[in-house]
Length: 90
Image (spheres, rainbow, N blue to C red):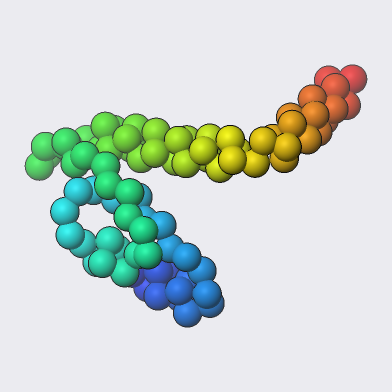
């Protein structure tokens, strides 16, 4: 499914960034950029918890880096969030 979504995204001009396990797979071969995470789960895993944490960490880091590069945008975003929070809390 990821490979089909990747092809569709690229066909529509999107840059594809894959967050996937270390080692080759169809997603990493099709992506423009690959951010690898450790595949530390055993063969018989319950919920792939460690992999999910690693992927979430990478997503958070990318998000933080994008915001840091847009410093003026970050200030405006934080101001809007504070105003929205005040509006919701009454």
